Length: 250
Image (cartoon, rainbow, N blue to C red; front, side):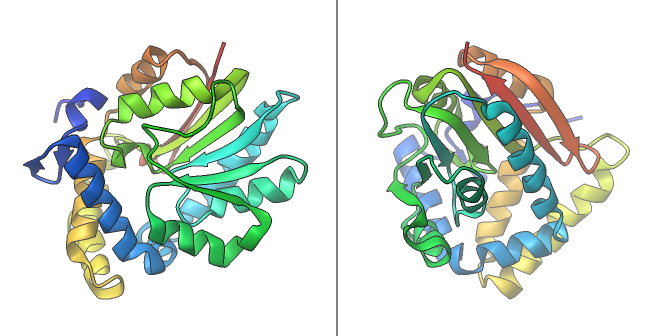
């Protein structure tokens, strides 16, 4: 079995090459700019639509933990804004901000949501918000694409209000019996879909490799704790293919 990596081991990894953090950040940003117009369609095809069910659970649990903690709702690495749009509908009196380093992804969010949301182009490792500004941070399938994921978690902890929550949704290591089936889908189906639908096989090859390198559940929980957050809830989806982890700032 492949040894689970840590976030520090991941931070300069881009595909099979090792590059500087700034180079990786630029390459990932360019990648998402390219695939932004077909990003939502590709997610539906790659996951057979199940990512929408996962995100409904994420939103439901996020709202359950929100309580009366003051502050904005930040959707970090928010992409095309699918989580932020639902958060806005559920919390119309709060500021809801989509934060993403990709101009192309934010443009897709603007096309969908218009001026109902606020938009900030910024990497997750350097959030342009003061300390204790947010009641909730959602981070869906974006942590592994950061040049320094551990710093991204520390930034989340910094901007959260005491009592605020991070709701993290990421790919994880599937259960051993299911891993071979998922591995075939990831290696052979996803890059071919990327080539046919998004006209960018390389981008989806990178995404598959980034999933493979991402830490397993226990390692990810340790990274969250190291950032200063307390785990309060976890849930696996589709035999561990994806995992929701919710943590609170003390």
